[in-house]
Picture 1 (cartoon, rainbow, N blue to C red):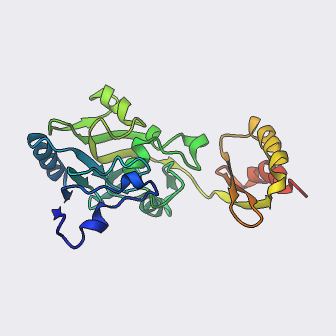
Picture 2 (spheres, rainbow, N blue to C red):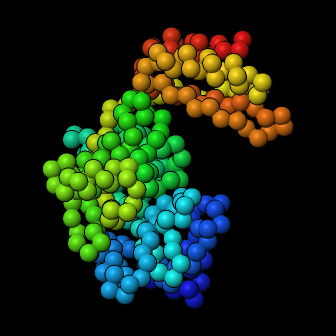
Picture 3 (cartoon, helix red, strand yellow):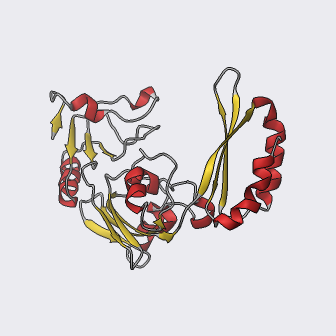
Length: 264
């Protein structure tokens, strides 16, 4: 438990955001080790009519994982990762970050579609949808969830699956964090070998021509191909394309040939 007088309070309360409205000071931060800790914190907040916020990874543009004068529940210590490679299921604690999941699966030949930033928490990634490089092939992170352990607003510990608390299960998968506090996720993981990916950089003057090219290529592209377009604030600015192909190496040569040859 961290009160405002604790030496680590300021570092604990901060979230990863440039939005000044996220600079809030809870009355207390509770760092939970278990689902029972979370339930006790929810009950305490409700009994004392205190605003409640939940922080896991802390990547938070809107300030939903912090509050002013209330209780912040910090789930960052809930770090369990359990893979059943036979059943192709993965159980993940609410405090795990995306990069840890990727590392855990990296030598298994299995993958979970995740957001592109390794520092993002698995909780926010899943409850917000989860858009990443395997989106076309396997969908969002939320599409791979099979079960969630949840603490409800009245402090009950429940499970949400396709066949149990179905409406809650539907709402949590991409609907945000307002329907309960998820303390553990179970996912279906998918067979995935190597991927081919990298950056191709062009002068910013190529943007208009590239957007037309991108539109034509993606109209017939296979689900395994993802291309992200961005600009780099250099002097002069640059057009940056990030390409990821999650199909076979043999197929990649034909699929990636026009992308590699653009502008030559």
